[in-house]
Every structure is written in C-alpha cells, then in structure tokens.
Amino acid sequence: MNVRGRNQRLLVRDIAHARAGDKGNTSNINIWVYDPEDFELLKRTVTPERIKKEFPKLIRGNVTRYVIEHLHGLNLVMSEALEGGVNASLNLDSHGKSWSYLILGLALDSGDSGTGC
Amino acid sequence: MAKGNGTFRIGTGAGFSADRLDPAVDLAKRGELDVLVLECLGERTVAFAHRERMADPRRGYNTHLERRMRALLPACRTAGTVIITNMGAANPRAATECTRDVARALGLSGLKIACIEGDDVSGRLGNDQPFMDEPGRLGDIGRPVVGMNAYLGADAIVPALEAGADVVIGGRLADPSMYLAPLTRHYGWRNSDLTALGAGTLVGHLMECGMQITGGYYADPGIKDVPDLAQCGYPIAEVSADGSAIITKLPGTGGCVNEATVKEQLLYEVHDPAAYLTPDVTADFSRVKVKDLGHDRVHVTGAGGRTRPEKLKVTVGFDAGVLAEAGVSYAGPAAGARGHLAAGIVDARLKEIHKIKSPLRVDLIGAGSLFATAGKNRIDSEDVRLHVALRTTNRDEAELMLWEVESLLCCGPAGGGGYRGVITPAVETKSILVDRGLVKPTFEIFVT
Image (tube, rainbow over all chains, first blue to last red; front, side):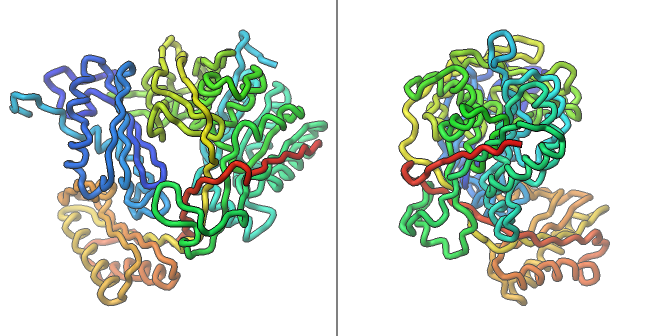
C-alpha cells in the first residue's frame, strides 16, 4: 500500500481505511490503521465528540465508539445519522455508504503543539 | 460430503439481489464446493417483492432467479454442490416452481428442491406491537402494509438439508444462517455448541456480501489498489470442524483477499462487535483473529457465541407512495452559480406557488450533494447537476415537481440542459420483535 510519508500526512485517509454500513437510521463505520503505530493517532483523531462537533446537522443522535485494540480498529455507531434511513432519506446516497469518506476526510489531530498543517 | 482437505467448502454466488452471475458460474464449475449460497434479500427488496406478488401472484421472487438457476443448476449438479438461497423473497413457492421448471427443461431429473415457508407473519401480529428502534407501534403506520417477514434461522434450513435437498429456496432466511445451517449439519454442532455457532455465523457474516471480501467495494486508487476488478472472483470459505476458516477465492480471478478486506467486512453493519444478533446465536466478533497467509488466503479464528436472542426480528414493509426525482445540468464558467440560481427557483415555485409540503430536497451534484447535510459545499464547480427529490403519497405532486424542473429549460438560468425525470414507487420499512412461537417454518420438497 502506498501510504504517504510521515510528515506528509494530513487526513485520516492517509493512515487508515474504512467501510460504512446502515441499519434503519443508524450508521456504523469501521476504521482500521495500516500501521499499528498510528493507532493512537487514530484514536485521538476520531472521537465521538469530534464527530458530533464536525457534523451536527447530519449526526443527530448518540455516537458510540467501540475500540478493537488487537486489530487496531474502531467501530463508530451513530444513531439518527442517515437523514431518516434508506427508505426515507432524500439524499442521493440514502444508505449513507459514502459516510466512510466523511471520516477519512477528517484532518488528523495535530497534537499538543498546535502547529497543524 | 466434504470435498477438500477435510474442510467444508462454501462459496458465495450472490451477495445482493443484483449481484453478478458469470463469476458465480465460474465458482460453481471450478470451486469444488459443498455448498453455494446466493444471498439476495434486503429490508427493501423483500417489501418490493411483496408488492410485485400483490400485482401478480406468480411473481414476488428475485427477478434474476430463472437466469441464475439456468446457469448454475447444471454445474452444481455435476459437482454435487447444494444451492441455498433466499431468492424466494415474498413468494418462495413460485420461486421453487420456477426452479423446478428450469431443472426439467435442462433435463435434470431427480433433483430435490426444497421450499421453505413460514417467514411471512402477515395478519398474525396485533396493532399494539412496538417498533424495535424507535417510538411508535404497528397500528401507527397508517399506510397499507405490503408485507411482514420474520428472519428465519439455521433451524428452519437444516431439516430440508437432512431430507436430502439439492436446492433450498426460502424467503427471509437470515443471511448468515444460510451458511451456518450446512455447517451445523455437516459437523453435527448442537444448539449448546455456542462457540461453534458463533464461528459459523462469522463465516456467514464475512461471506454474505460476496465480493465485499474479495476486493469489491474496497478499491481506492493509489492507496488500496485492487487487481482486475472487472473479473473479480466471489469468495470461498474453507471451514474446519471448530468453525475457524480460511477465506479465499479461485485462482485466475480478479480482486484480492487480504487482512484489510477481511477487517472491513468483519464489522460491516455490525454495532457492538461482542453482540451480533442472529436468529441462531449472539455472536461475539470482538476477539476474532485475522491472519494473512498470502496468496489471497486469510485465516479467521476466535469468534465466540452466547445464547440466541429470545425474540425474532420482523421487517414490516408498507406503501410509502412515490419517490420523484428530476434534474437539469449546467457546465462551463459559473456553472455552480447558475445551478444555485436554478435550485432557488424550483424551491420557491414548489413551496410558494404550488404549496407542496411533502419532504423535498434540492441538491447540486458536483458542488456538494451527498455531504450537503454534513456541511460540505463548494460552488466553484464547472459541471453541476441540479437534482430535485420529493417523497409524496400524492402522485399529482410528484408529476408537478417533474414539470417544474423541466420548465427550467426555457424559464431557468442560461445554458441548462439534459432534463430527466422519474417517478418510482416507494416502500418504507419498520422493524419489530416477535415471540418465536408465532413463527413456524415448514418445508416441502419438489422432485423433478
């Protein structure tokens, strides 16, 4: 896999891959780092609080995060997150399959230095 | 009857209703399979199938059933592979009769085709049944119900296999249960072998979406490249007596099986990884180990299981009127601004002049549509498509919306073109939980 060099990484997509699924109006997204060394960075970046703050109009319900330590992955379960769900939503993507790329498009946590990118 | 190295070989020949056929034929011919599963039913498709059955009592099963059976039955007969499928959808009996006719026309005599019924619980539930994940009760729906189907587990399928069925056709058979049933029968797992049931359910869960574990739905060029996706192969599970398995695919097919493809599927549509609920078991995927053996072979072990849920899930489908969609495109300099202007015109005319109050959405494809609610828009695009969507139970409103969008061709911003409009029937679904005693699966064998 052609992952970016350490100092070029900007987005979650640069360190991890993900897949989204739906059940009713609940979306779940599983996210996995390519390199176990990046797992702490992923955990710091993708938090329920961050998701609620980034997408308040889309993710309306609770966000629960399951941590799968030994496989270096997270599972986000977000209720009231699909604009009504596949049979009611007016979004072109009524399953919310593309939501995985909302997460992969988040900027990585820049750490305490606050320099960002 | 196991065919390879003491393992039991199960292949997937469809992971959803519209999945590909030619790779399934390749798998049936070359896979040396004990069982081929075709998983073709979702919450939406079962409700649509009920609607088709209402219109024509001979229909209501998977649209591609006849073509699939014609292509797969001869290869599976030759290889001694049992087919298990939920392509019966809302009408397993008609699907079985169709399959029998196909088999006879192919000259396959003595084929045993089992029809599993009993998942349809229409008319058996009280109006006071509460919804599963949301407030409200069955009686609150207020629209015509088109179907109610309980998820059937492995225990509904095993008796048909014991009766020697070559093909098993049901309606709402739970996806992983179609894999667990033949494993349970082959290895003699009992209801108390919860770890084995959890492991067999993991196999089913990983396999049920077909190519989603062999490189489909995975590629992201430059980061996750997948070879020859146009020739992607369906998955094979080589399952051992303890339920651990190797996930692989046929040599010479496109796609890939690796640790990453397996992990993405491991928690696909799973909430709590320690409690994946099926009619058969509460499966625990939280301690699963995934080991990449190379050459498109991945070993999965470590699933667990606890007692099955007390109740069964039922999908209730009801008539939700129509979904109307219409669009016009704009390209070139300031296309985004012109599309934005068009969106405002349509929105104003539908709401202010035509007083439409049904759920309406106006998007600009190319300038932010899928992620519009998430707050991501950019208007500087040079190629946008106005897309208007309306859900309504009033057909006149739907037609009026299409008319308004088309009127932009002369009355809207400059340079708009490519109008299309379509109105499709809509079905909504709700879930409820029912006592197992209400659901009594049966089977009947048809012999050619």
